Image 1 (tube, rainbow, N blue to C red):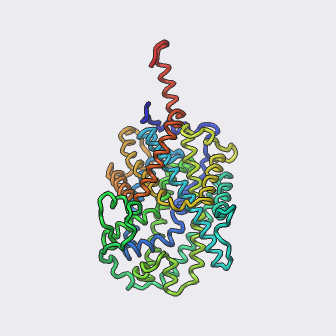
Image 2 (image 1 turned 60 degrees about the vertical axis):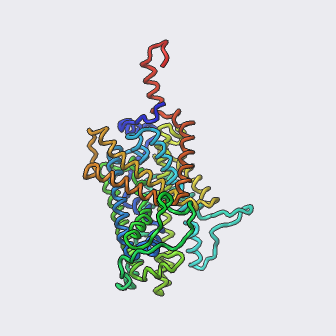
Image 3 (image 1 turned 90 degrees about the vertical axis):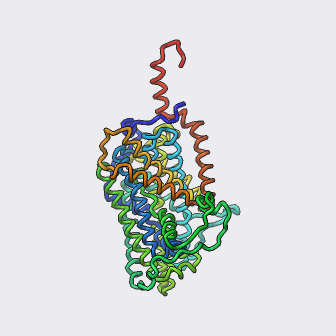
Length: 503
């Protein structure tokens, strides 16, 4: 049983041309940049900075965002090198298959499904809540859920997931155009809020820029809710100071999650050697600037102490505290539109990862069929949309939101390490983009991502272990035996064995 058989880059590229299982190359650099912005700038831009300032870093939350952006950029560099070397759909799953073997590729692919499935479901659930809140602001009292046979059904997620599933089935270029329009509107709203907010900024609120360190307020100290690193070491949590800046970076890092989804579109990009790096890094640059500007507005409008006194601090809280309640309507609309584009990109990524695994036989091969006319994996997209709609509309899926983070970070780690393996195994490859400074950046990227994983709640690690365990059961009962690579290797070996002899 060869668990670490690798699939060659040439094999992956040739499989992408298999009739009936190919995707059309229609996306430009602009489309990729907007896709990255769309998935990273959601409702979190109006809340995550305020939460980090209030509970961790104070005004120095700007530094936290810079550190988080640098960490994300290191991992994104590794994705860019892989994506230009292997320009096919599947992202970290395909990259791991080419470097560390089938078993690890399955685990990473399974974790990507976890990340994208949970993210799409949780955000669709929140979209319904934000829609209800926005309607209430507009004096339309429509509840976020209705009762069906005594069970709460959230109608908002069902509507938005169904709509974007249909759009994605109709074509990647069409969905990209719609995504571009929504994202430009979202950016316009964010910039408007930033410009207006700067009129309320007072320099006194930035002092002290780095508040003195102090013990964190007493919270539920059960093993399940504390960070896994604290659980292992028995360390006491602290807030503000240098530790607060690092903790703030760990929190706001998740505002940048989503750029790995952009890499899943490698097979649908025109001229991927140039388009992929440009699109990914341009998107990351825009997102970083927007988040830093928002945090400057939040911490400049009101003192971080006033934010800390609020139960759920956000950008809307800052405007409320300075008497600009009218901005709540604009922020609510921005949050709603922000989540809309995130859902669409995540649904697309989920279908593409599932398609890549199906094309290799690790999941049923029928899921990798594409429409001859539109070039989209229609049946897989519909299946993914259906599962997301069921989770978001009928379950309390938001309780598992941290599973998104650990699934993403595990993929980041494997891609970072995979760069080192790829360069050792295939020194002949000359991708159009290479991570600079040799092995330094991939190693630093992997270590930083591992550190952030250990700062997630202990219960998240427990659920993660259960998910991986379920994945291994599926792999050993189905994926391993139906792997196309495994069958080809077995067939080749059988041809070499003389008749009458057993292996």
